[in-house]
Amino acid sequence: MKCPSCGHLEDKVIDSRPSSDGSSIRRRRECLGCQRRFTTYENIETLPLIVIKKDLSRETFDRNKILNSIIRACDKRQVTLSQMDEAVSEIEIALQNTLQNEITSDRIGQLVMEKLKGLDEVAYIRFASVYRQFKDISAFMEELQKLLAEK
Image (cartoon, rainbow, N blue to C red; front, side, top):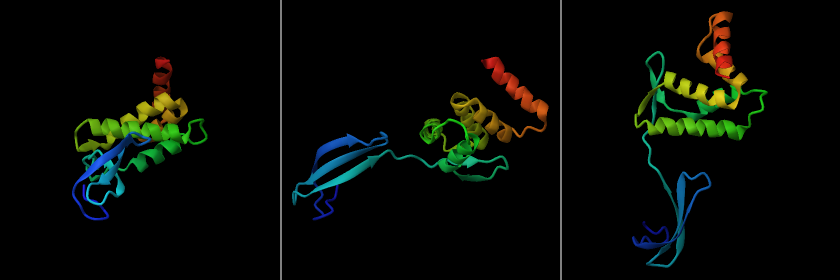
């Protein structure tokens, strides 16, 4: 690691700690040239995810779109923002773990529905009604019947 003060290329690691969310490592280093200390962060390098939409267009994955959808579905429900953010993180990790760099929007929608079903059933039905584009009340009732049967 190049020292930010003197440019020397050799250093020693004094301390390493995981970040609070566990996604990176903070390292305190000491330059072997000038003995100055500096901090570096080590992150996992990930490939960008590409989302294939229903119209076959492609766009880069945006976790904020999923979070906003979940926030709308959970409106006036007793689901905390941290629970919603955790659900989005779990979805993002699941997508990264597929080792595919292209994923369909349909698959993302299914993962969101699975997470919402565990968080709040009303939020799940709200999301499902938009995601599955219920055409009439019978399709809506059919989804409710499935949910009740699982209980």
